[in-house]
Image (tube, rainbow, N blue to C red; front, side, top):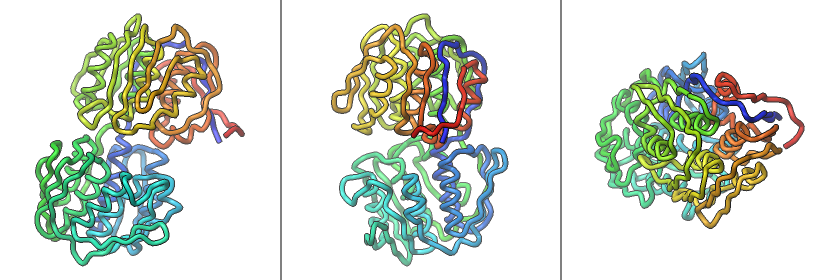
Length: 420
């Protein structure tokens, strides 16, 4: 077990390189199940979630390795179609194997992700999508069991825009007979990347980046090589950290157009921004004015940046309201930020943040991936020492975060800890 020990007060300055997108990698890897053979995916991040997906792929019979940023996946020997609870419980994205296994092999047995039920939870959109494509779905002892001789194209309208369900249906429909039209499809860059990967494999689709996707099923797909997109949430986290901690920070190897909503809000907060083709430089203001934010599906303000924005507003000169329209209960980081001296009140799905002049170091506990990021950012500007426990959450989605922050001048160390 490890914790981060942060001595606050250092300004951040310099350049920091963004890693490949975690959420894109977790979709690209299962897509390799659609056609047997060898794939090379460049710009793959070295993360716990990627490792978990690798282990899941290996239980199915695939061979997966990562050398630097280059991931190699060989699906020629896949002969098992069950995703066990022991791995799926660690990561909800494991359900991504449902569509590819069903489409390619006609059978999939995938554990229900932890905490999910058949009812009105996100997993039901995955199941309904497969059923619309002609699959026979049953539930048995906590597993989704899907069968189909060959899937058939269909019209699918999602009541809620879901990145995971959109990606799963895209993969399954690529090998279905006929045409599939997905309405209210997710438009996130990670979905566009998945679509481009599938088309490079030979899939036929149109409408990527819009709310309506049309997929013409094909008989077979073929393996290919692909370069993963940059992680927009990691880039956004460094940008917010730079704005909080002063100085000038340049985030490199990123895609500015994926961050339009965040950049607009940062400008409202007085941050000076200069963007090029693949980098963003910011200069922090002397004082941060309060700026309200409401999360929404892409291209809106991402829910995965909500916690970091709350940390930024905790140091603002007034009161702001942060509303999360995606996840109503995603505020577990708030009590921990309050331990650092933040003034935040949560009412249903919004947080009212009153900026304070000073945060003070304390021992805090991570509750999830993005909560961890908000606590680290707050610790960077807090007076004294902050200890962030349960850093394994951070390792799920940020590659060597402490090294990158130290490169910007932060005083942060990963140390062993018996505390949980």
